[in-house]
Length: 260
Image (tube, rainbow, N blue to C red; front, side, top):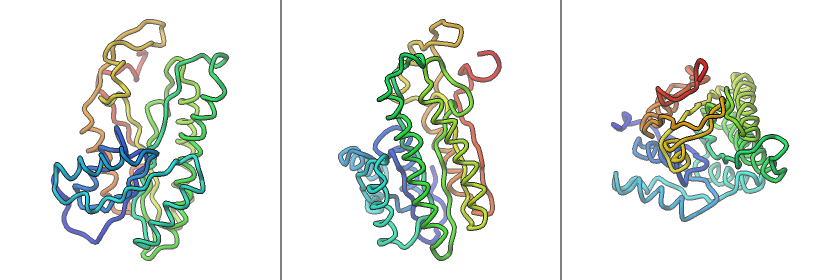
């Protein structure tokens, strides 16, 4: 991806930056000239993200801040955002990306611990980060910034056996809409990227076969990670007077629209 034209320092924070979509988007931001705070539970995974960015573009890691934190812990989230404030005095972009799947199960068979893990990470963690970013963005000078929430195709349509993940991702849609409305007065643009079947370690099983709504098991098409990165960067680069409220990027042939 070609670097963006030179501009004042742009500060971003990416959660779940140690793997998958979070890693890919964090690297794209670093290559685009952003200073990026890499947040996740494992310091070694975050350091690997910075190293991968540096391998492709020497010097990129100099703008990466490794900040291990569990987004389900509001005190840990606050500590990271306090570090951002103390270091830069501002935040221009939050990518609220951290999330987990739970084992497939019908509602009666889902372990309550799995339900709580999904809610704590996918919803509570996203809110804690959005809340902290909102507070910083409305007070900084110049004020305002952008928040992009990672929703999912599941924010619109469930898969069989996915009640915890689906419920939390539907809740992210409500979080996005409410925060976008509340952000208007403070020049905070809030949007959501909904992703379907990107090729990653988490979706390897889809290529072999995954349970469908009709009870059959069939392989599903996947798309390259670069399609997600390009969509995300288009949203991230917009001026604050413009906002992509919802963007859906999906494998063209995956069973989502219509009857499957």
